[in-house]
Length: 149
Image (cartoon, rainbow, N blue to C red; front, side):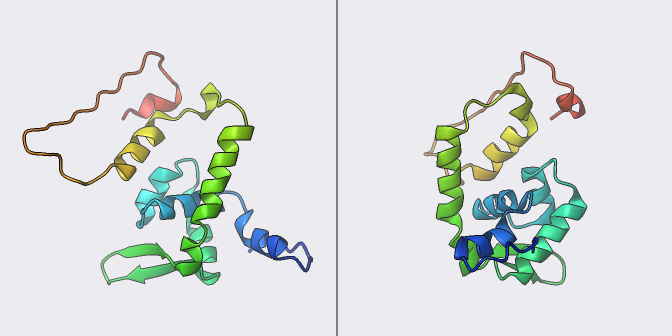
């Protein structure tokens, strides 16, 4: 957990855990159904693996996330306390759209967009005979996208 605010206030106590950099973005990814470490990394691509590991450990210790291992792979799953953060994260997103202002070019990350599209796509089968395709094109090269996708 982060440093204490030393206040007898539930908001201050919650923020001692949740206001550390990247923490709520990790929770956002878990709320979207991501469970594996490498998939979480794709959802927060600018977060170092070491810091992601540290944040997950903090969330496990706080009872927000449960670490499950079947011997071959590890999954991170939100507990009831973690799932209760959904309206908080959604409200922050709504507030951000309304009050933060426009996004700039530096906020755009095509790889993250495609990852989010893949991670949040429905798995409901299309009706028989219906096929879908998605086409993406970039009109402006980006130094960040030099790795390709």
